[in-house]
Amino acid sequence: MVYISRKEHFNAAHRLFNPAWSDEKNKEVFGPCANINGHGHNFELIVTVKGEPNPDTGFVIDLKVLADLVKEHIIDKVDHKNLNLDVDFMQGKMASCEIFIVEIWKILDRALAQITEARLHRIRLYETPKNYVDYYGE
Image (cartoon, rainbow, N blue to C red; front, side, top):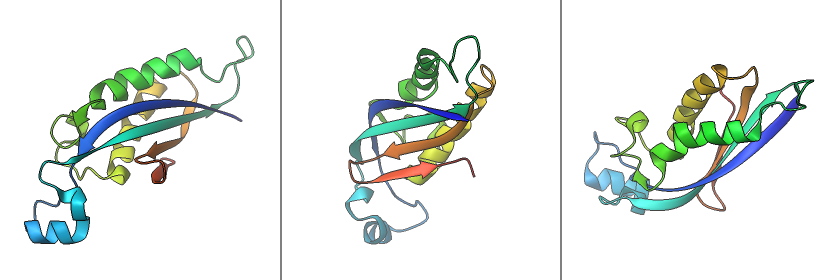
């Protein structure tokens, strides 16, 4: 099994808040991340795909194909957007990195299955240089 990764960058804003809670409770739980106008991050997204190399090409997946897929299905939808307001697949969901990465997985998993036998292994999403989440589809 060979693992191949592609890293992408995007900028996005979000607000962490629970609409069932008061403003005070949201501020208590989420601190400045509950700011009514949101806040932004310079995100890094690393998509890792696994599979057996094709004997004719030597590729698990052509990295240009993977880059185009991630750009079309994720980056173009989230870059310079507000995750709470502008991103269709995040509507009605908590815009935490944990929820966000699961939604990204669902989209990429379906898109990959249509073009290759390679499968997602892991997605890593850096919110800051020190904070990131991993998701393995489990």
